[in-house]
Amino acid sequence: MELDPTEMGKVINRLKRAQGQLAGVLRMLEEGRDCEDVVTQLSAVSRALDRAGFAIIATSMRQCLVDSDGEETVDVQKLEKLFLSLA
Image (cartoon, rainbow, N blue to C red; front, top):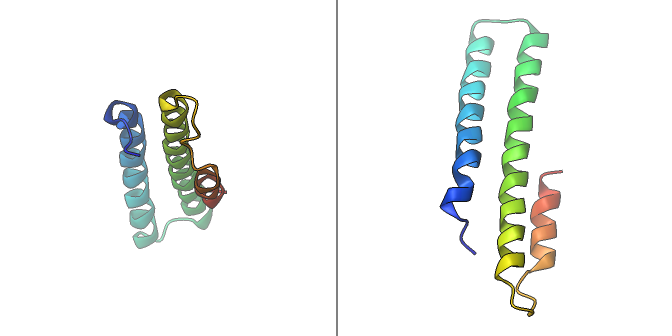
């Protein structure tokens, strides 16, 4: 199943922000910044990536449910595996 590009706009923006945050973490490490500051920023990057992943899975699930015409078109085990891979 392909993801709806209009639905992915927010996810793409979130990932771009996470990319910027990760670049910031790298700069902080190179500058020898305080451990607490680095870990705090790294935690923010991790949360952003997790949320992007959950948004992608949620969109996929919505599309499966909307497109369904009574027949099971959702590979539940596959979606569950994807979901749990983010945990």
